[in-house]
Length: 167
Image 1: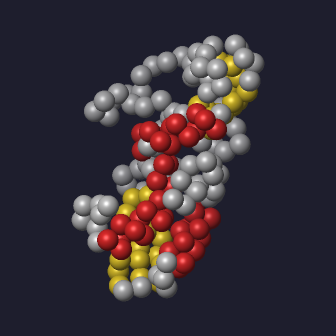
Image 2: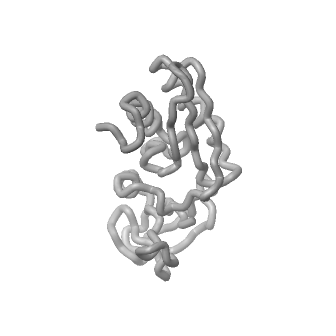
């Protein structure tokens, strides 16, 4: 399927880049995470990719750029440029429904979404446990294995879990 405005080759390259796993959350792809902004050909064997990091100082950005470059070079692109785009900023609303499903299956509570139309995140005092579904969870630490996650524990099943923080 060709994405509107993209050539067949650009659509193929976008799909390949979109399938690159996130280095910090390998259960998610760059497409799932919603950080892939654009892929466009700049010449017969040159391509430019635009990524928006989850945080401006994301430590995984260099690894993502290297992984994207490798995937594109394997597809014959000899000149690859990976640009960081900060505007508009990334938000957790960019995570796809598939990405949210994968996070839950992986044992990470996905971020809550904003109200339709981009309103504020609905006020909830807790986060649903990805293991048993209980809302009886407590915050253990505002930071977990990465700065984008918090550490929580379910009081029902007693399992600790990460929660991908809303942004």
